[in-house]
Length: 116
Image (cartoon, rainbow, N blue to C red; front, side, top):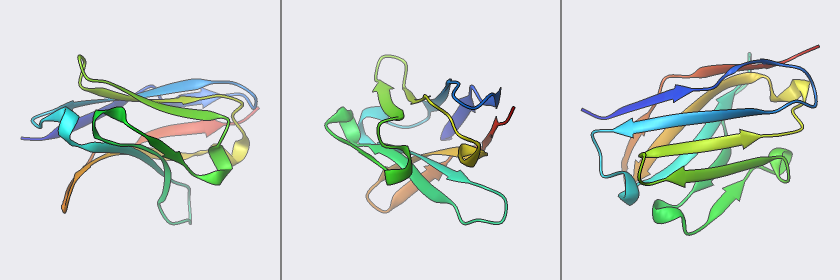
């Protein structure tokens, strides 16, 4: 049974930082591309950042380039999203995703709220 368990969400002031983690189990972690998505109230879910299997390359939404960094630790079967210089518009529920070809899995969301 595949599980993607996120952690690290919370409330932070504008300009602050948070690190999200997503621990994967039940799959061959290194074989899966991992991504973070987010969904704000009233908006569609959008891709925030992705990292290829074995971490060869990364990609980011324009809105987070230079502020967010995605990484993965194969020893811990965990993908991270380091979020710096957070803005109120980053407020959303963040989801991790594992994908290999046509097969994909979603974790439960974790709330990130950026507010003073």
